[in-house]
Length: 220
Image (cartoon, rainbow, N blue to C red):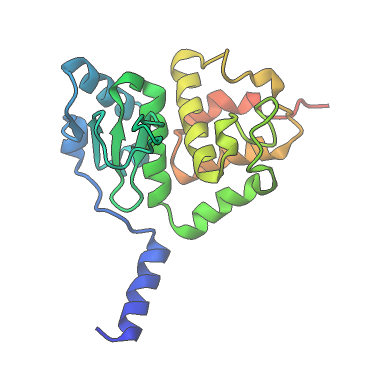
């Protein structure tokens, strides 16, 4: 293939945000995207994914419940250092059984959704709290970033925002983990982040309406 043709397809995929093919709705509805694990573990994963927006569900390809995933980061002793992992190109997700909960599933599925967005859209998200990434010290929420782990980079911040939003709307949130009283409502980065999640389809309009008061400045 000529260089010009290769360049054309590279640009086409970058603009379209193409990665792996989307799964069928039948596969999503019947939970066929989950591999391994006990019946209870698979049921938890299916329920978590079904709680997400249709757009987010459609970007999940496979979720494997396993302690043996080549993609896991490990220390020099072979100990797994992460609760789950989502591969960039295929959006294939592994979740470590010992850390399996809905937050972890939502976090990894949010990575899959984010990877499927066009590059310019991911850049828009990254620009919201651009100057604050890299510093996980101190208290959070801060600078439009919802958790300390979200301060790692804008990929993790997106995943943490989605996981927190769904947790809050479904169960009242992790009050011990994310104290919304620390939110500076005059910092527009929080509301911009929430609006981004709504506009890109990561959150439903109903979930957005539930969360908006936490980030909207009081009227004078």
